[in-house]
Length: 207
Image 1 (cartoon, rainbow, N blue to C red):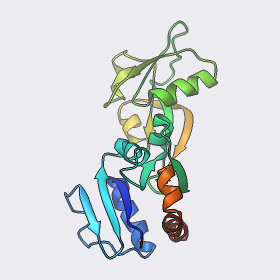
Image 2: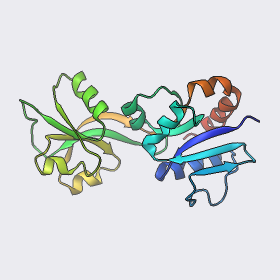
Image 3: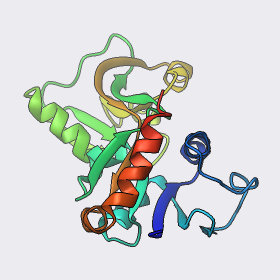
Image 4: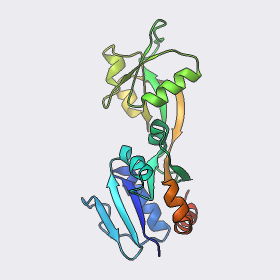
């Protein structure tokens, strides 16, 4: 059986992905979700996992150090990596939206958008004909409108609780997000039978 190397994101997506793999009949170690190892070999399944930060998964897959991976649609939209998107796993669902202080309009001269998704934000505002200045932040995006750094933020929304607690409201729904199974184009060609078999098994378990 051909060995598959799978890049998996750490955190909540990892736990949800493990459950869907187990539901598909893959034998995973009992302590899989608690491990601190960065590489896990499962000889019985001829699978090797690489555990990475969510933003790094598509990088590993694009460069071929992982044959396949599980990545959020937000990361795929932002990075535009050369990978094949094989299956929507419909886990870790959320969406990307713009938000700001209530009852405020964007500055007409040079509206500023704070985000950790500069590509997604630029593309969205270009498509609706708005010329904006993008301010790239890596965390606590909600602060930007509160301290006058930006007119709006573009960020992931799960329950909306964080926005509400910081006195912000949603303005525009930009894109739906869920976790996707992706493949390296060369691996997909050379290991197509094994990868397609995995896709088939996972597809039956997708809610």
